[in-house]
Length: 365
Image (cartoon, helix red, strand yellow):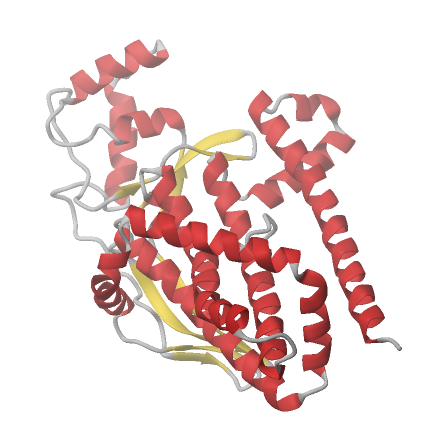
């Protein structure tokens, strides 16, 4: 048996190591069936080496050197039996097909989803091919610098922009126009996630419309971004939406800067720029379900950061000895995120109250 050279089926996805509670885990996914599960570092060491070129004896020798323990035939039978039962081994039974994207429409008039394209991955691939010339690092770097300069100018003009927003709220026609443009920006936000995923080797599962009246927004699901090997690729996919929001504002920013002082169009554009930039930047706040939370999880290689932090803090209050059994890195991350997120929420509430007071103050006599 130890001379056997088994291999995983082509296409099986293995994630980088992720912290989940007190444990380090890897995610395993079968893209054909859509099934996924977690394994520990020792199991990952073995599974990741099942490539058909190495015998079980060779893998077992490497395992013994890494973990100080030899594997017997019983251990191999248990592991291969598990992989075989999940139809992950090459030469085994064919996997059950994935359920597919589901029905085109779910829910009702008040709450539901509507799938807009039959093949989201092919649609995104065509869009990616069209945009490929501007997806070079030098072009994206230049555009990022321009966006940051725009944000700096808007931050310096925030007092006047708040006055423009208050002015806009009492004028229904331009208000509807600004709201429509912002909705279109959210659609671009979602498509940007899909294009970024295609650019770094990801796949897009579904593109559609999700609503909970009176709010309706586009969505784009990326199937395998958790399994991308490079952290920067995961960060690029997660941050692409906010970047697209800022890019959308650039022509309006140029228009706004070119208008003379006191032009009513400038007030509409000022409100649009304030709301649009806030939309992009708030999305980068590291709180669920915002993109900033996803970015932080990828950067730290942590899954379920918010619930794991909450569970750790409750355990710390109830049983300090049990909490001390967490790895040192987990204790630092969960305590830091728990305290930091609470402070961040208070700061956001304070900023919102201050903005409202300033806006109301500018509208006074």
